[in-house]
Every structure is written in structure tokens, then in C-alpha cells.
Image (cartoon, rainbow, N blue to C red; front, side):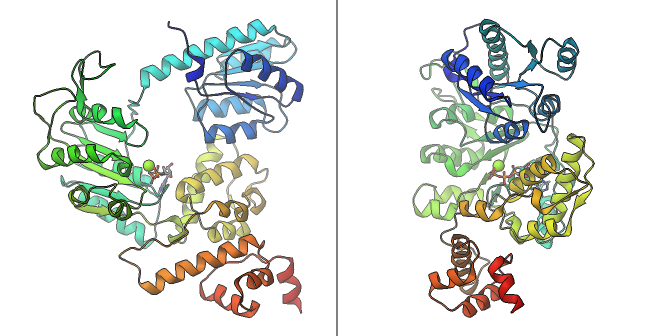
Length: 474
Ligand SMILES: Nc1ncnc2c1ncn2[C@@H]1O[C@H](COP(=O)(O)OP(=O)(O)OP(=O)(O)O)[C@@H](O)[C@H]1O
Ligand SMILES: [Mg+2]
């Protein structure tokens, strides 16, 4: 096996509640060339895992809160490919056996020598690199998408599902435009699996995840010697998708020159491999998606207008979650039952207050954000219902929201757009002033009464703060 290049590995996650242990483990491994992130609890570990890729996890079995073993079991279900090395306490063989049974890669019994640690870590690094190589970019998940997976009863979602059923059996090109986390991938998958192409390949390419100079060869293949590193001929993924569907995700990130080639491909299914002369032809249906404002990209000349028209035969625009009303609760309950099962907890629903909190949030990260919020709540919750306090402080998170200017769309009138803008300004001011109406009113140079009026008119929900309560009593 070839040497592992530690610089190319994602970081290593250390979970240990003893500060000194964290420091000494981090020191040893950092000086051995690894990138290390150390946290003090399993809960924090899960947050890190949600955020980024790790090549392995080193965790103590004894942790406050969620134990090392619970953590291990959970990681095994959710991130199967990440090796976990467990530190067992004081030579207790039982723990070591349990850890291995639960899927730990190996264990280290305290006390251990730095060499033992370094060895064990290196073995995990090797394992990670091997797995990565084998699955590189080609994660052929044995997975099928269905309409039932798309949760939602709101009129918009019912409409959307009807459209999927109508469009799927045809061969038309589909363009899916929607904010991040609105379910574009689910829609694309459902279209393929409901089409007559379902028994052929469904090939997915994320245009933003592949370096620009490699994307063309990924898509259309290359001949031997086409560029440095092209050691042998490689067929394109469009060939793999012959007879099936290709899903180009994040198409807004594709370079203009490749857009031209894609356009030609869409006209008649022909293409040439990079460095090749022969014209090849396949029968592929294309689905494209982006969360970028494509009209703006056309205006900025980053996206070809002719390609847009060619792609835009049928357009899907999954609505942002905040516009789906009670779907928020349906989805939350769906994720709740999933995560409580995975984590072996018996949580049956949400308290009324928690529901209200979910309904009043703006959901900039849409369904993905909701899923993460519910997952976190399931970890934190110790009762049978998710309480409001197990949900994040959305006021703080709302500051990440960045919609400085409303997006002009065909279905909104000028008045509605102006309202969106006004709502944004007022909500930002409220956040900046910690929901103190008097201060927000001062900032916006209107009276408190006028601000109240606008808040009501715009349907902004304000959780009563101390100031509000005292005033309401008066
Ligand atoms: N209607 C839905 N029902 C159930 N799960 C959903 C729904 N919409 C989205 N999800 C889930 O939310 C997560 C995000 O969805 P998805 O990956 O399809 O979003 P996306 O629109 O492709 O986002 P991005 O633009 O960031 O790639 C996924 O885990 C997906 O399964
Ligand atoms: Mg996506």
C-alpha cells in the first residue's frame, strides 16, 4: 500500500472530556503531521461531523452525557466509512470487546505509549485512503427515489408531485431551480425512477464539487495522453448514463466554455472525448439543478442564455420551506420519527410551544436545516416530547440570513416584493435590537406604534420579550 499523504487527509476528530488528555493527544498527533480537531463531548463531536468530513474518530468510552459507546453506535449508522478508534479505560477487556462488536476499528487500552497511538492512527488513515480511492466520485449508491419520500401536503407540494408524475415518463429536459435544501435532489431522483429509463443508470455529477479542468473529462471522458495525468483512456459519464438519466447538480457553477459543449450535446446527443476526434453519440436524458439565481447569472454573463432556454423546457421550483405552512410540522415529525429510531429514543412529538417556534422560524437552510435542527433536538431531549428549549436559538442563527434584496420572480407583484423587502429590514432591525420594539422603532425612525402596525400587517411573529410583557400588562 502506498504511503498515506497526511496533508491530503481531512482532519481527525478527538472526543475526550478530560482536558489534559485532549491536549496531549492533540499534541502528539499534530506533531506527527495530522490535522486535529478536539472536542469534549459526543454531542459536540456530532456537530463537527455534521459540518465536515473527518478521516477518523478517536474517542474515549467514558464521556459525560452521551457515552462513547452510544456515540460509536450512532456514528456507525450515519457515517459508515469513518473508522473509529476507542480508548478504553483501565484495562477493561469487556469494554474493548463491546467496542469492537459495535464497529470500532480498534481500541487502545489506557495507559498506552505514544507509538501505539501513532500506529493505530496510521492504520485508520490507510483504511480511509483506500476506501476513498475506491469510491472516489463514483458513489454508486444502491438507492432508489420515490414520490413517497417527498413529504408535504401543502398545495405547492401537491402540485409539484403531480408535475413530477406528468413529466417523468417523457424525455424532456428538466431544470430545477430552488434555494439550498429545498429538495432538488429528491425531485431529480424521483423523475428518473418514475421514468421508463429507471432500469438504466442514474448518473449524478455535482458541477461545483469537481475542479473546472476535470469536469469536462468527467462528463465526456478523455483519450490517453489528452492532458498530464491522463494515463489511459477514460469513457465519460454520459456514456455510463446511456439509456438512462444524467443529473447535473449546481449547473450554475459550470464554466462558460463547458456550457457551450453541453449545449451541443443537448442538441443531438453527440460529444467528443477530451483529446479525441471521434464524434460519439448517446441517448441520455438531462436533469439540471441550481440554487443560484440563474437569471442574474445570465445578466452577469456567467451563464449562457441559449443553454438556459434549452434546459428550461420544464421548470421545477420547489418553494422555500417558510412558504409551505404546516409542511414544516409534517417534515419535523417525519425526521423526528427517523432520528428517534436511529438513536434508540422514545420521543413521540413536539410540545405546542416547540411547534410554534418551528412555524415562526424563517428557515434559510430550508428542509436540510429543519432536518439538522430535529436531529440535534433528538440528541438533546430527555423527555418524550421535544421541548422548545431543545430547539436552537433562532434569533442568533437568523443573523446568518442573507437576503439583502428580494429576488424578482414571475409570480410576485411589485407590492409583494416591496413587502418582502420591508419585512427583511424590520426583521433585521428586530434582531439587532434583541426584539426590543422601542429600540428597533428608534433605529427605523418610526413610532413604536407604527412599527407594531407594520409587524402585524407583514405577519412577522415576534416572541414577546420582557419589555413587551410589562407593557402588555399596563
Ligand atoms: N419534501 C421533502 N421530504 C423529505 N425530505 C426532504 C424534502 N425536501 C428535502 N428533504 C431532505 O432535505 C435534505 C436536503 O434536500 P436536497 O439535498 O434535495 O436539497 P437541495 O435542494 O438539493 O439543496 P442544495 O441546493 O443545497 O444542494 C435531504 O436530506 C433531503 O432528503
Ligand atoms: Mg443539492
